[in-house]
Amino acid sequence: MSLTRHHGGIIILLSFALAMLLTIIPLGDSLQNLRPDWVTLTLIFWCLSLPDRVSVGSGFMAGLFLDTLEGTLLGQHALALSLIAYASARLHQRIRLYPPWQQALTVLVLLLLHQLLTLWIDSTIGRPLAGISFWLPSLISALLWPIYSQILTSLRINFSVQ
Image: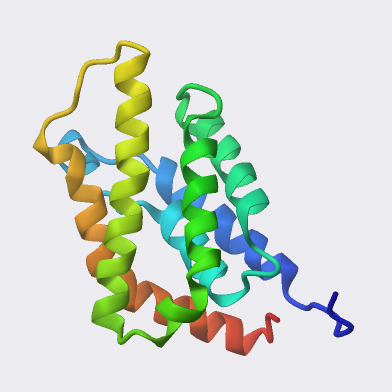
């Protein structure tokens, strides 16, 4: 148990709220498959930065909100994001030491795991399988990781989120 007082909880919540908003903003049909996975990126960042504050429970709650917003099977994203949060929090000391390009590759693996779990659940309930464009959001998210993590890091520093 930490004796220091935690600061910046509202910043963490606002970053998740912004990620949810970016997830549901309507885009054209051609751009829909190019939308990064903002919620998962945000979850991975906070799990790597503050694994004692943002972990499996946060991933589960973010997943439930995402399930509600997207109208998917309740618990689908909650399961996937819980596993992503667990892996991120468990490996946070190792991943944080990687250079940004190697972090992006690790994030790509985590994002692909999220999509594989989603695809598995979709196929289990009888939804049609997606094409190759289903995998584009993971690739775009991984490419955006160095920039996005730098933005959230500066936000964390400016608001003293501990």
